Image (cartoon, rainbow, N blue to C red; front, side):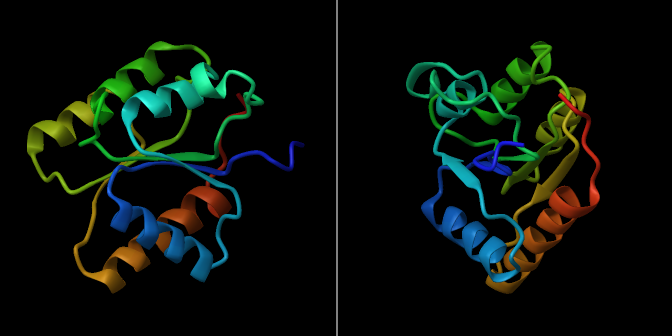
Length: 146
């Protein structure tokens, strides 16, 4: 097993949400190897080992936490490309977004997400949400071997 394997790929452009998410994972000792990308294009480069990530070991994260409202390439397009490729089709993806728009929810599920979570604005609720996500996806969930 690769000890440098990324457990969580966090796709988030909001620095405050990045810090809150990292704080929650650290506080609850849930993930040691979290990789952060700040836009959809970088997420795709990371996942498909291209561009600045071309030399990356192509180990699959246990879960992708994906914001929808991203610069360069939005989260729904990231999902489209992930689900269209055999190598990434089954990767667990949890959308964590501020969008409550029904069309975003429906489209994300049509594209094969595993869960859709609206980010709480309250610090304690946000931290608890991330703790529960981490506990489930990193400790309880049994992902397919890709």
